Image (cartoon, rainbow, N blue to C red; front, side, top):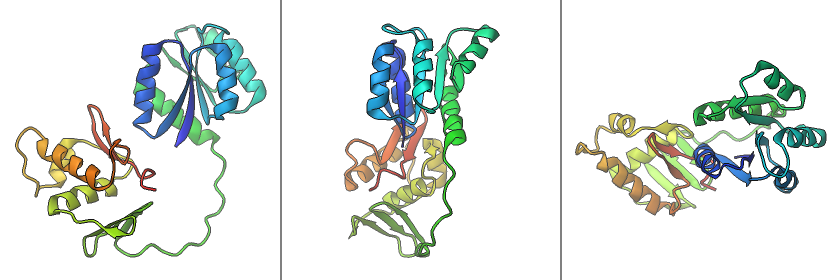
Length: 235
């Protein structure tokens, strides 16, 4: 999970961005003042900084300069400035990219992912590893053995109905991808559809109870979009 330091004094925008990024496997640390941002940066060691320019305590431009002097961390600036010269100045002062306000969360997410891809260290050659057992999907303490439809959670077999097993398998095979209810219903033709999507929601609730997912971290609800199986949450 990538850690984001969000420096934004607009509480409503900060809450919107925090909730949206959380749904896509980001951890967000928040600072509401420019002078606070520098202390938070050193405390949380983020992978990327999202920085507003108009801040109390210290102007965002000065924060950007000081962050760049201290670290090579990617900095994405939120700006309402449309002037090309202002945007060029931001990049010359250390910013890596910018997103214009009003912020569109999907654009912000795409820009953050692109920044992290560009700045990620080169991966070392993979060590030789034993091949996974044929017909097994494994995520931390969860194992789905498709050849005999066995589900193991923390090394213990989990009793599941046919519908629950098929739903879990579809979600796990698309780990990290949001699946809409319509998409799930098309894949799960064996689950009765009552016209209101309650069949999917009910089975999601049952799966969460079976895997102690009380905070909906393993199978996330992405509001307005569907459900996401989080591959990193099954440790």
